Image 1: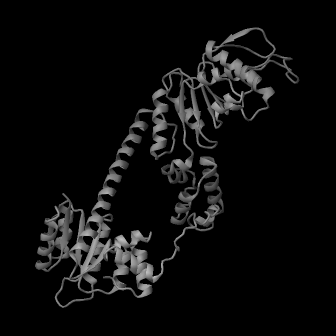
Image 2: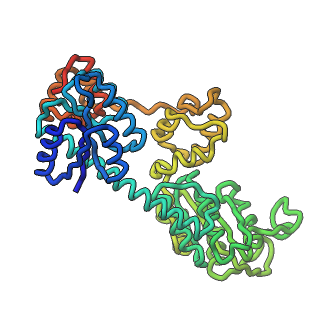
Image 3: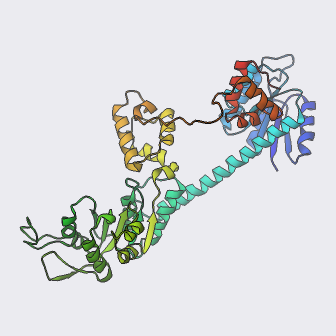
Length: 445
């Protein structure tokens, strides 16, 4: 059952509110002074505060209530507070709402409107509490992963990333090939490093080959090596990546770029551990854990004849799908903090701009943006203008972006005078609605 603390020097007010809330399964605590109210908050669990603005007889300045509100915000910043007073100047209401008050209710109040406001705030508080519980569970999960496994200093906070990392750690001890799918720049190689670091061959070499960075005629030589004279320019024998990775892990990035002849030889190595260098008939044997990655649609390539189906099923005995950064929004700010210079913190405008951006280049783009901004920012902080991100396209809607006086009055009427509900109907915050009410000279009901 939720609990409300009423801080008011008028016992009749507290009794009336207690009776009202008890009829709706809400507990009520009472304090007659600001000091008593703060003491209750320190000692008991409270979900919402309703506070008076004046506590000294014949005082109407509201200064006592403003100080009480400031004390509550300082010690309990997430506590919803409703301001209750017979002294109703809209300017004071606007200022306190700007400072974080949940709502402003005039005496004498309308029971129905007050209950609607209280229930809305209690629901929001319950949602915030549940969100904090979920975040706490997620933090514990990340801490457990970090304590049990070597995560190679990976920065992540989004649940989508945690699921991929947890699965990577789980399959690391297996010898089965792993296929990591996801867009370019999303961090696939980092996932491969985590698999290697927690595998049974973690003490062995970790060798990488980007199959998309080499001409197709050289990929086979890079993978399997070549004897002298095997191709033009091969003046001496050279070791391939499989030999270099013997006893460890070979990470094949952009596996979709491997030519069909190389795919056939790779399939044989995966099945037997045996291969020949180009230009050689001598068979060699290696023990290598193969991890591959691609941003390509391999099933579509199979249908078009560009990728062998048998190799595909051999490579993705275990598949890890890494989402793009835009689908891991919880990672954006932690990664930005990792990439920024130590002496250039992120300003609020920069943080908001980072969260708005779509990040088509994923983590790689984010790193480049932050590093460039850290170098070029002239102020003490990195702000949105330093990021040089494209502005989002304006969203066109059928309703005017700025409500007129009639729109506001109609919304307040529909909401029965509950400002919180009217603001939600208009698609704005209570603070924004109060500012517009003040501009149009609309008084609170």
